[in-house]
Image (cartoon, rainbow, N blue to C red; front, side, top):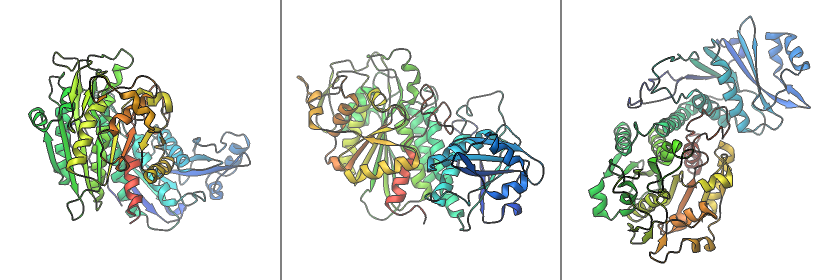
Length: 519
């Protein structure tokens, strides 16, 4: 059994856990469990919902009337609330459709949570003992917990001063088929916490979360979990030759910095993984200023860095036996008097020179310096970078998948499958040599842009110049999935705010890759 925990009252109040509910799992019969609301999942067969037979004992012929009138069909994401008298005050039918998947569980969970937050439900009993065949009960339970917490996330919680509503729901009791799944609950709450923590950082506006405040948050994280932290400021970056990070950040009055978190979960000096996140706390485009309609959402250009903080939080709280690095080049890209100008030439950390064809293609510049630094000085077995890098990936894939770039076929295949399972989908994009020709420069070793055609691919090709072994590097362009844009991705567990994309995908990758998931 888990207990309710402290909640974030403002952005800088460090919370050990952002989860809101208590979760209990039990194999008891439904009739023996104390709750005011019962939720049952219903599949669809031959155009009718398949509802557990025992429900009629609570509602009688009313269930047949509802089904015959087609008021509830069992469609995926469909939710029907019955107000009844007796043991339960409410019974919720949550549809899974005729081809149930883990996404069906997520949609149903978000559906009943959203429905019940407007009622007086406090203790909710969810019957998961009849999870459809083909779905693992443990993984379905993980989705239930994570999505409940994601659905209850309030992006305005640190800022609103009026009309604050107290959450009525206190507890979710999960009836299982018999196996004790309490240890899974404890683990998955830590993942949910990390996802919503990521969202909180990504959602923070630029006046609350600039490079300096990112450093503050990273130091809090390091203190909380015993991580080693290194922070390199302007003078340090100059000495190190990290001129790419300097070039992007020098237009702001707030100095750029490189933040590195080190987590050691096992013996040995070598590093298993590095996670690198684009952390542009506000992107005005530099002197290539963004127009209205694009600039207003650019607080989200730090979503990659926020995800890395979330991943490090999850890795440390789960106490994974791995050695992991998190790196955040934190900058503001503003058109100040000392800002980098188009056609400037910058010598990068690895010695290459780049021509700045466009100051609004800044994310790849700070990532390039960071990739080459981590690659050279830490030599991790595998590097991931997460970045809201290009609008071109949104044109290519919309808001329902991130662009995946790598020359590691095994990792690409695993991430694709996990993306389908977690709902954080990825689609592999090519890195053929023809795309590299678009980056040629007459004045430097490489240009930072390759023109409009294949813009997401040429951005990834640019990054690959700063990695020694491309098989040990994975680039995720999350520009279309990091926050809800004009209503998309349209999911009931997302508010019109940050999604935390990448945390679940990559933590599940670590858990499954190393067999930690159900230990």
